[in-house]
Amino acid sequence: MCKKPLRVEQMNPSAFVDHAVEMDRKLVAGECRGSGDLGNAMRRVEQKWGIPFSASWAFHYRRPKTVSADIYARLVCAVEAFRETQIQRLQDERRGTKATNRLAAYFVGAADALAGKED
Image (cartoon, rainbow, N blue to C red):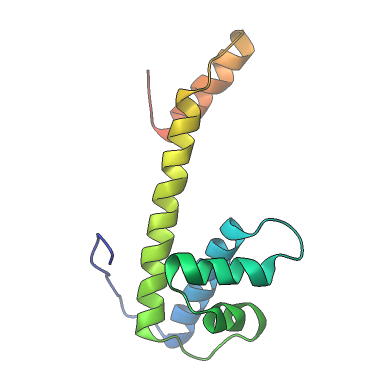
């Protein structure tokens, strides 16, 4: 499942729900292909990450009172994996970027500094 063990601190149930809603919205937004694609994006999240469509729908349209531990753990793992894929995409895109003038070199250097990569 997850590479990192899930660390749970003392939080009230509404904080877990808020965090789960935030994570689900990030996943669905990452899968969304445009306006009117929200339902299909939720289905793709279900296929890709194993988050039930009904849970995603509930997070978007009627906030639940509690979140099951299984769904919460899946959300944490899915967001971590999604973040890693986005970082990998950024690194792949950066490798293909060449600065063609001084201004472009400045912006590429600034982006590298923000990413924590110093050349």
